Length: 87
Image (cartoon, rainbow, N blue to C red; front, side, top):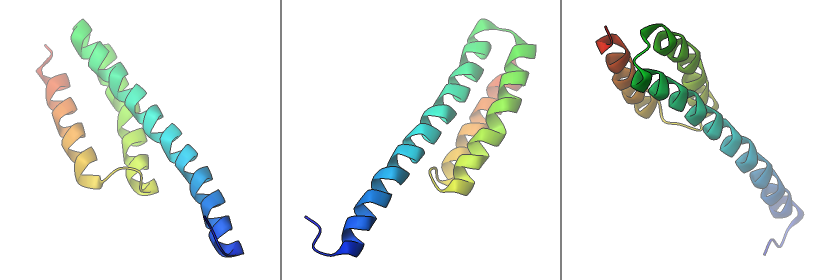
């Protein structure tokens, strides 16, 4: 339990930030799922459009500190390779 006003405030702030970060990661996952479903559907145009929408969202997650940059780089690389493989 928090013993000081500062510690109580940190708890409140941490709870608010955790909610925001959780929503941000969930949003990114949704964008990635849209790309994967377009790839599974075999539609290159839809996959390219979904990837173009997902990429800035994932990079925003890096800049906000909710995802590691190498994790996002790896995921983007793998997704782009799968999108490019559609013919």
